[in-house]
Amino acid sequence: MSLSEFGLIERFFCQQTLKNSTTQLGIGDDCALLNIPSGFELAITTDTMVENVHFFAGTDPEQLGHKLLAVNLSDLAAMGAKPISVTLALTLPKVNEDWLAAFAKGFLNLAQHYGVELIGGDTTSGPLTLTVQALGLVPQGKALKRSSAKVGDFIYVTGHLGDAGLGLKITQGYACNHPDEALKHFNCPNPQIETGLVLIGVANACIDISDGLAADLGHILQKSQVGACLDWEALPLSSAVQTYIIDTDDWLLPLNAGDDYELCFTVSPEKAAQLSVLCHKIGIIEAQSGLRLHKSGTLSPLEMTGFEHFN
Ligand code: ADP
Ligand code: MG
Image (cartoon, rainbow, N blue to C red):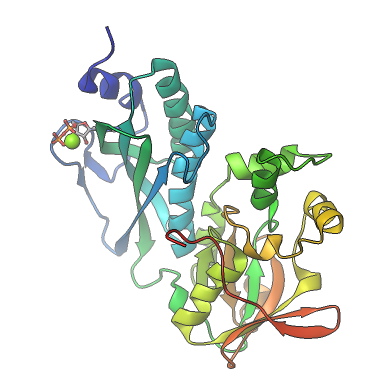
């Protein structure tokens, strides 16, 4: 006999031993109840992943559970919030216990790593669709917003650009000599939680790179009503991405490919010395609107496009 809805929740999603002091009431009632410590604001975000839109049918369920949570925690990281709890809405075509066990493992292992408690959710039948709502705490008035970049700020990114995009190309058939790192970035991104926390009080504006650097930096520029100039030579590229670019001439990959989940942030020159995170300075915020790229001695406009649904 296959598991009932409640049996499934009990068996796969009530196993967490972790309990947070912010949780007054977790899974099992109509709502969860949270205690919000004074001096903090609640940061809330939600992201959905749909089969055949955000992931291929047959994707490893453990990696999928990890990635679903990671992309949500990445939004908290981008605001400088400390994750506390999540809800999980699952729409499943059928109950496949092996799939659920692996999915829950990937999801709950990452939750455990960041001290995040699963406090509720919803379970329904239908086309495979996975939604998380993530909640975090940020000191009152200190959240890292997209709207606070200032002219003269330096622009930084964490990690490398385009590894996840290369991972997607490899999944689609591109032959790469050293595919492991790129595939890991694509399938199992790590949210930059610690970096976000350290950037509070240092960075002016911050965003996580989910749709590509140009598009996501574009959001900072638009919200802050400024422009920017990037230096091609300064972009941090893994050797696999460098080889890919030499091989294909597709140099836009690290600028336009999504799914990296690194942070892009701006810091005033006065505070740059206070930066204590591993990151690369890639450009500068300017008064002139739009995004420009300095490459091979020429300055050219760069479209602020990336992945978009309905296009
Ligand atoms: P309701 O009918 O009030 O929506 P449900 O019967 O859907 O409640 O869920 C029962 C309890 O189990 C609730 O506390 C809900 O938050 C939790 N829950 C349901 N699905 C999940 C899930 N996938 N992961 C974690 N908790 C879940
Ligand atoms: Mg329900």
